[in-house]
Length: 56
Image (cartoon, rainbow, N blue to C red; front, side, top):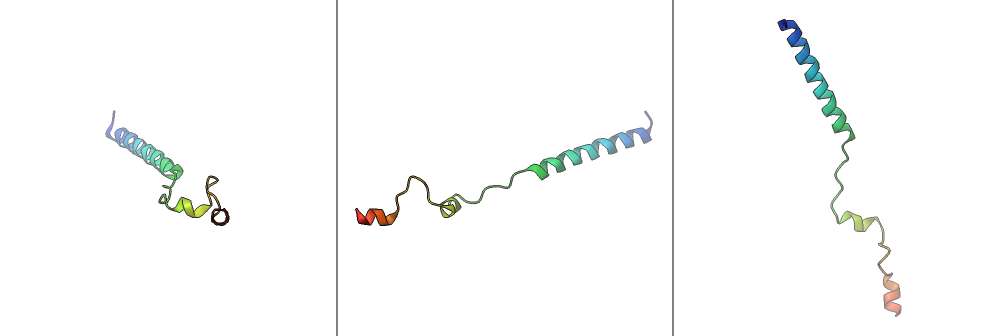
């Protein structure tokens, strides 16, 4: 195989690897924020309203 063919083959293989890595990077999910942020999103269904606790 000639040197030019080897160069083209290496270029195509390298480009394929880069495109695959880029597609994986694009679909990667962002890490979730710290666990304390979940409490700020809303009240858990298992919790009781503080006013009910005081009333009882």
